Amino acid sequence: MDTLLTEPTEQIILAFAHALDGYAYAAHRWPGQEREARQPLTAFLKDGRFAPDVVDNFAANFLLHRDFYSHGHLPSANTPNWYAMAFFYLHLYHLSVPEPWRHPQLYSGWAKLTTEARESAAAEIRELLRQPDFLAKHY
Image (spheres, rainbow, N blue to C red):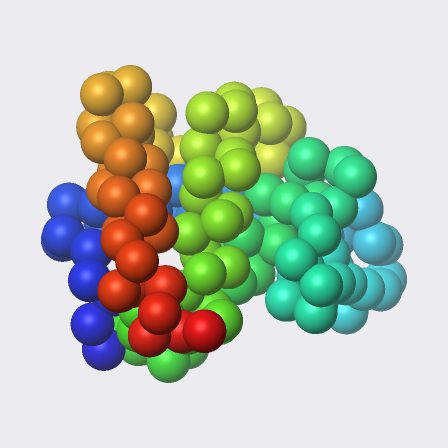
């Protein structure tokens, strides 16, 4: 599948998605009801609204990427899941991953990235979204 993103940007997006221990957060936030953890993601995919709780948005991004992992690839450009991936990154990347929910092993992959690398990935996404022919293919 072609995301139309460079490999470094894809890797940065993945590092960000894996920085949160979404399973631990879901077990804490929805004890015994982990199925409820999908509600913020489902709501976003339905109407494009982020959850009021920022950590719920981090968890939704995590779950979105778990779905990608099960497919073995990131979504193709100009698909609803590609837009969700892009919007979650742009909405959250500048925020600190909440410390209690940082993944014990995988957070370091995000933490070691420079601000410039994170911003570069965001700029690449924004540049794609600004291209009239990119949006025309979807709408």
